[in-house]
Image (cartoon, rainbow, N blue to C red; front, side, top):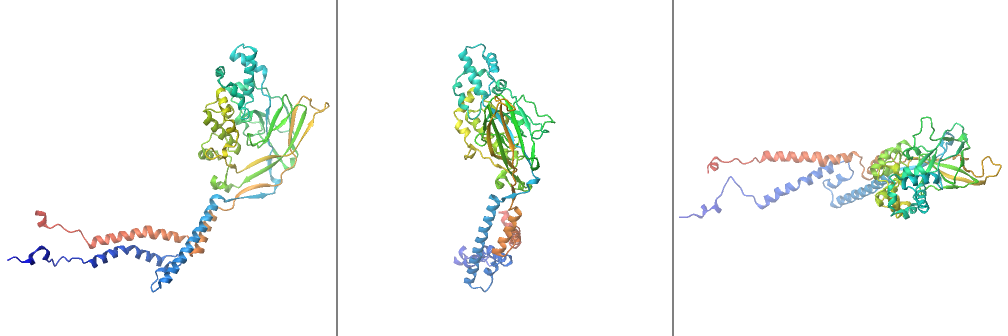
Length: 507
């Protein structure tokens, strides 16, 4: 007789108890409550004020919500103040202060760059024309003279002079425009006198974007000269100083054979278009220009900040400038040289070549006559301040600089009984009044001040110290990992893996 009690559904196994739904919910709840229990323990042990009142026993729910709201508002206030402190440290941690101990200062006398208004030596020009193109008719000779005149006076201002030579294939015979310009340029003959008779400073030929010029008193002028120029000798003085007790200081340049334009600028720089204003000097007159210097110095601690924070670069940080903006090679960093490097890169982008007067800024394809004509189409782009445009390039100011502003200027007609001839071209540059103030860049909000601000903020709003952040990191990394690992090890010992029965293994 069949017994229903022997059916599989009615078999009872006393050694195996079925779990009810309530038991399953209880075990799941224990697994879920592991993290809240850990958070409760953290709230009770932390040094952050107020968290222990949220989990304290026998508290009214309204009291818990009140403390939670207070801690939330305090945390938001701390975040707001800390964010403001961080923005100040990143964007404006420096200050400009005023110094007045002028009797201890030693200021360099400004450099002078002089450019002839007419650079072409016509006798040498005719000789080079015959070497390159042979005996040509007079109209063709005048055509090539015009080209050499545009070449020797080449600058960013007169690039349009090359436009009419754009399609001339006969100019392809010229392999080196810089060398040809140096051969047909007029010689520099002058007489110079300095108030300090011991000064031995010379004019040196320089390649600038204002033309083929001659620079006096510059520490970097010899780095921007032609290939064939000899380096300065050990006994040659590059710059000269001017102290308060030496006033007045000045130089007079005379016996020049052609009208000139001259620039007064810093000894560590060269004049550029758009920044330095030229002074024009013509035959039969003398201009006397007195300047005042405006100096900015910087504390050594300023180097601890990034260039973005302090908003400037030191002269010897040219490698940092090169890595940031990938510009040409610069011997030192100055604002003007950075602009020149930017314009050089723009010229190479427009016409795949650079003008020969930018050759000293790095290697590159030097423009021929056709390339110079190509650049004339982009004259406006090159002469304007392209460094201010987004996506072009940006130039920091110098952390330490000396600028010269015109204090007074006067022009005198040369009389017949004057020491020099009325046909002479001459000018005078001097310092009559010594500036009694200068600016100093310094750090007003250092990294140490930032840490102090952070500590004071969290203490004020949350009643804790910076060690509380270490405690927070410890609780939710190292200690939490150890807790989970210990629970996992304990669970493995309590519920070992079932062993396989010998009877089951034979089936």
